[in-house]
Amino acid sequence: MRLHEGARAPDAASLSAEYDLVVAADGAGSTIRTALAERFGTTVERTAPDYVWLGADRSFDSLTFLVSDTPRGPVVAHVYPYEPGRSTFLVEAAFKPTVDELSELFADRLPGARLLENQSRWSRFTQVSNAAWSHGNVVLVGDAAHTAHYSVGSGTRLALDDARALAAALRAEPSLPGALAAYETGRRPAVEHTQRIGRESADWFAGLADAGPSSPEEFLVDLVTRGGRISMGDLTADADGGAPAGTVVSGR
Image (tube, rainbow, N blue to C red; front, side, top):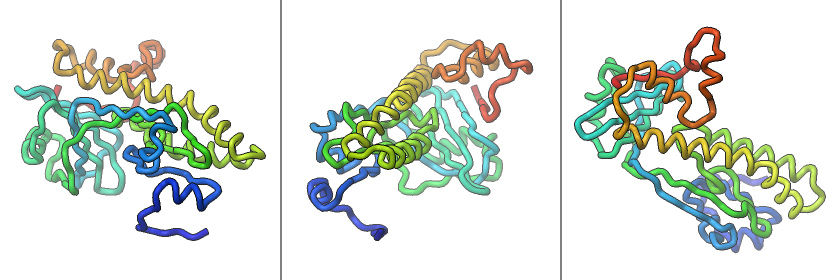
């Protein structure tokens, strides 16, 4: 096996002609998928609101949601640690506050810390779906095949699960078409379930501006149950009556 780090891949037709199997794992904006979009039955939809990927030079303990009300509407930050002393700080809003404005809005949660930019720009989430995940000897995995809204934090897990399932199918099935069919059949239900949860979660966050006032407890319950992954029954069955670890709300 030869690895070509930092190299630009040839076009889909060239890859398909040269190799027995082409695994397209090139993300939501996949060039390979785009070249074969009609074959895959690709649907791409950009959804509101706008969001921006930032960092913070502070390590939060766990996945944290921060909400700040402003005269222009709520600003939501999805925060999680990725290495000691650093966290991802993804912000979504109906308008586009500057980094300085965001630093001021969330100053109480960032004592002594800074928000970090790295070619950060506001954009909209890309919802990707495909009627078929393979065509000939080309197969899609991860965000190239499907995206789930960032608010449910499942993109990396889905991609790794795809890779494991594809490898298992290739080992188990005697033919490439059979392996690719088995891979898709096995993975699609879980992926579509997560996409549905992601859409419901995205709709919930997008609707915050129109939501009426609520107590902190009511807001937290709505947040935790927003996608249907956790139900009210799950919460009431909790002997301690607490929300799942890692969920934090500030400034609402």
